[in-house]
Image: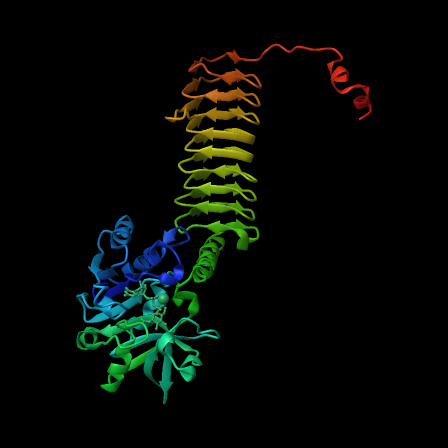
Length: 438
Ligand code: UD1
Ligand code: MG
């Protein structure tokens, strides 16, 4: 693929009012990444001249994308004087003769799905699909097997509304076509906007060649509402999970599992129903049991859950984590933490057993502190480890102990218990004899 044959323009300046959100539409996320990220990623596989048109919340959109990409051209649209997808094209200056224009609200496109636009020499190649319910899309009016024009839903008459062939919103133009027609667009329509789609009728009138390209909704679905966002998420999730199952990951009831775009699996992995794995997590030869959440963490040769929560920056190797255990920013190596614990900002070494109900008290209301636990430590149930604290190898902490000393040396038993007191027959005196039978 020659990346310098084609320029790509992504339209991302619109308000997205149908999303009913303060967030710019293109920044809404699909599988953990802004919609616009997915489109730019696919675009960069095809071109080294990618421009993004911005206006609404332009700083936020630009900053968000600069985190991921450093070679994108941002172009500002004058939305006051030239609103609409046609207005968005006014200030772009693509370098190449062929220009692919993508709507910024199509997170499902892939480089492969755009191939059809590259190998066709028509003046305009435009994407269409047939929908049972064309609601929201521009209708493509075809007559004598040729595209005549596109009419937006808000401008369409009844006959046009009945058309089920719609404009998917991706086009490849010869640069000369854009140079000729963009300056001629008018905003004489229901939305008083400059529609890029009007270029079609103008080009048709001048007998230019317009090639419709039938595309699938799986890749070209536009996101205009929160419902579209949820539907697109399902498609993207299916794609991500299919890829990993094909690579050998076992997923039980995969439709209930959520896995973000950057998650990586290696070796033999098994994921049970209801799990959520996010960020840059790496799961290597591990098992994640039902309804567990793993965020931005590494699991290696370990098993986690059911109902465990592994929060960001955790590194868990050769370890067993059981139910209701929360781990945050911790490194666990060869550890057993079977039940009901909070392990935050900690480092725990081989052979150590964390009893049920153990809490690392890592926060004093102002700052966070570290807990370090060495090898072969036995932490009894219901212990609180008040950080900062370092527990050397071979230490035993008795159940119910609150460890407040900053350092515990090897070989020690740590015990903090009040002496037990027995008050004979107190129960009967308090409740009366009747309770004896219960
Ligand atoms: C657009 C098409 C419609 C097509 C549909 C496919 C037009 C006029 N209509 O409608 O025919 O069926 O996409 O999904 O093009 N944008 C700007 N500047 C603006 C307005 C929009 O950059 O002033 C951007 C938006 O950020 C968005 C894209 O253009 O990413 C499409 O805008 P949107 O408002 O979603 O257009 P649709 O109504 O979906
Ligand atoms: Mg749209």
